[in-house]
Length: 282
Length: 330
Image 1 (cartoon, rainbow over the protein chains, first blue to last red):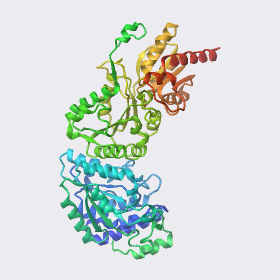
Image 2: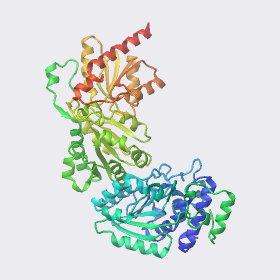
Image 3: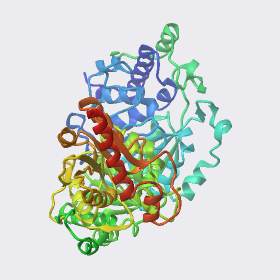
Image 4: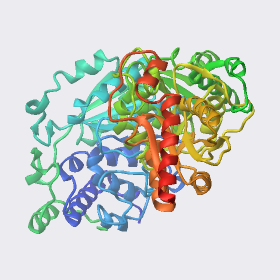
């Protein structure tokens, strides 16, 4: 049975189970942001991107590309990649363990299919996505480049260097998403380093700005459509996506506490009891 | 190539003087003509890096990055995804220390085919002073896994090296400079990454150098020849991977070595040589390098002299290490 035949909501539940099990299995990792971006990444990989996991190549010619800039939410990405067919789901059990291709933060060094750049040190992925989108233009390819960034990550100066660059060069085949959960390691983003009016900031930097609910699949569907409709008109597109950190596991929701903490055995059992699905765990 | 020992002063004075960065600019244009996957990025120093010819010839393949070097490195890494061969251009200072983490994660660790082209290296940047005179860049770059590190000595070698850098698969740190220096290599001399170039053969001391100090080392060897000392002079233009076999072959004959470089002693070419010889052929060594100091404003020639990188300092280091060798032999 292929994961593609499942309804999106069931896939999301399965991916959330993978996330908490992977982080529990490694006794380390970042469940909060992973759970919060599950709906987005499942939607992206199963319904939005033009991709063929069986023909994966580093160059990705002829395909849409995705770059995860906030690399610490690797559990959700690994789960989605495996469920989409980039590698065997059994490999998810190796997450963060010695000799694994599933490094704590995404990397190319071990050759894991689906990953095109290392990320984890924040703020670099938007620049990389800009370059990859420009390469698509140079190659005459009519395909999209997507990227995802944490809201806390927007405190990195390089993000705003890239924002200028993308607008100046008219990179209009780039659609970036912000995981706008309002949390970062030290607490609420507003307390740590306020971002101010994000919509106005991105508009002032010359981007086409959209907003959406990052958990409502219909809203995500509309956001993707609107983003692509806004693309190709000389401006890069950013979607400010409202999410809840820890979404789907009640005791992890809406708090920065579960940014980078692994559940213990009883917490895992509690979480899995909330995430019921007919599909198979790895 | 002329015989630098027997050549008279008028011959040396008559050598064409050109800047290495112009060799890069010409080389970049040539590799751009030969391969339409070559793209260039520059952080608001197009004229200084001599990238204008490429920009004019291939406007679609030239990407102005503005004064935003971190983003430029990331964009370059992204351009490789899709098969481009990006050359980034800015001063050596802004090519390395300012963007170390970007190079480390998005280029080196990610194994991206980015060519980091760094002009105005070292003290010979001159009057702008220590803020711009980076002397630590080779050390930073050679520590990164996957990174190849190249430092060229004249216009033609830099031009030829640009072709080799373009053909090489993998990240490269390519270091060159600002001032005009004598052209001492041949226009048709192939540049082979990782293969040292023998400038002159000798038997008393091995002198290993690169960059602008190749010329000062030639002048030092002439002084030493007048005193009856013969120098085996190696241009170690590739610091990583180091040409160990050329080094060990030479030192096996001379049994002493001097390294000379426009860089801090910590982290430089001399350190790579010492590490190689300590493992394979322990040898007395003297280091001609900047000794844990920042530079200052001045002309390139004044600065090389003041910081102990002139021909006299190199010659003295050679005599000193020969003395150590002879002391050990007693």
